[in-house]
Image (cartoon, rainbow, N blue to C red; front, side, top):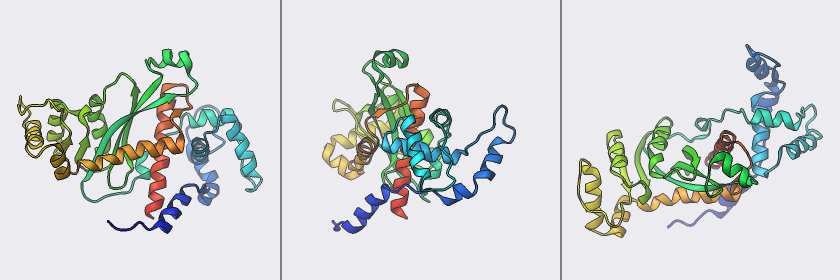
Length: 297
């Protein structure tokens, strides 16, 4: 195994902490506002979306409530002459309506990619019984389902559900979301995704399934020969041999993603509405993808 370049590794981690205000954002301020206000009904926007996205990024990284975010911008304006300071209600209203696109943060690949899918629990922050009732969650947390490119470690697709939704039910949605961004050639998943429906779906898409079948599985096709073949392969060399032969160990990439997201952004969402919580998690994934993109430059 090659020795890690610790100087580069340390520099990559330092760069994750950089907050850069693109000068193009300031220079194109008026042009962007004119474009966004063209045809808009009601009061026009006073701040472009790029600026509000920057404030949403600051808020997510530093775990700031909206009022403290306004205070942060006030301090920043002392060092950047002419930087406008929106009030916290404007920040809240605009960031709750931001359109977040993962496409803009992805490293492109010419060939097929291997994705790993899984889910993790996200706590409903300060929600108490009220949020449990409103979101109809039983255990006080939501489920974040993601598909990760195992080479770049970037999020290529994600969904958020309440805690009663099973992992296997979300595989189709994750794959369809990922295929809109990358060419999926192989999928890694644990036993929660083991079903004839999922194997058949991947076969129809021309995607190689590397799904760890349940321990009590028997090689019966029942209309799904690809799953039967997988069970036979697992029974022949054993699970360890099957894992090595198919690179199942690369599935750790999705576990590493969950660990990184929770260490950087915390294990909870600040939003109180379900749709806003989904947008908040999507923003965090986009920020993390941007961190990785900067490391590869």
